[in-house]
Length: 291
Image (tube, rainbow, N blue to C red; front, side):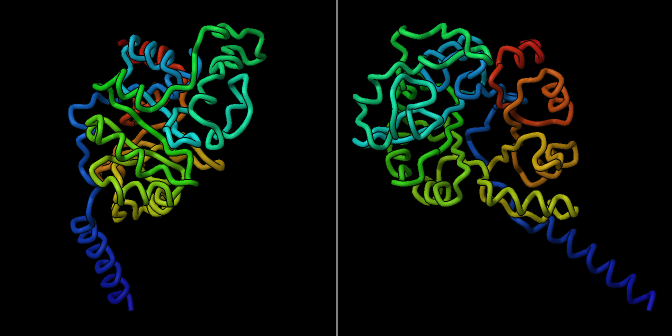
C-alpha cells in the first residue's frame, strides 16, 4: 500500500513538472521591450496631484518623468472616445449625465477640474475655471506619441472595441498600449479585434490564476494575456507576495500593483520584485526610486 502511495505521489509530481514545461506562457509583448523595472505608472495621470484623466495631468506626469500614463475610456453619443474614469460627468465636472448620451461638444463644455480637490475635505479647488476639459483619446495619442499608456476599457455597452483598435492602429500605438478592463467580455472582444496589442488579465481570468497559485499549482496556469494588475490584498487575502511574483514571472507575466500611494508599501513591492506600480502619487514613487 505504501509503495502505491509513493508511486502515485511520484506520478503527480512528474505530471506537474511536465505540465510546467508544456503549458504555454504569456504572449510576449513589444509593449514591455526595454521597459524599466519597476515602471512608474501614473494613475489617471496622477489623481492625487492633478485633475484626473486630463491632458493637464498627463503633461505634468510626463514632466515628472513617469514611465506610463494610465487612463480610462468611454465613448460619446457621436462615437468619439474620451478619457474619463466614470460613465457620467457628475463627480468631477460642473455637468451631469452619462457620457454616452452626450455629444463630444457637450462633454467638453464642462470644467473637468471643477470638483477635483487635493484635500480630502474638498476645501480647495485649485484648478477650477482654467479651461481644463475632458480630452479625447486621440488628443492624448497626438500629444504623447512616444509614451507607454495603460488604458482601461470602462464602457462595455455599446462596445467601443473596434473604434479603440482603429485609433490605436491609426496612430501606430500598437507597441505603446496595454489594454485593461474589469469586464471579461469587453477584453475578450478587444483581443479578438486587436490581437497585436498587449492586454492584462480581466478579473475572471486572474481569479483562477490566484486560486491555482494558492494551492501551489500556479505554474500550470496558461495565460493568454501579458500582465496581472492587482491590489496588495483583497477580501483579507494578501495577493502580492514574493512567491506570487515569482510564479507570475515563471508564467511570463508582468505584475503591476494598484493603487499604491504609501511609500512604505512602494518599498515593499519593489523588494518583492513587482514590475510596475500604479499610483496617484507618482512624485512619491519617483522619490522612493531615487529618480
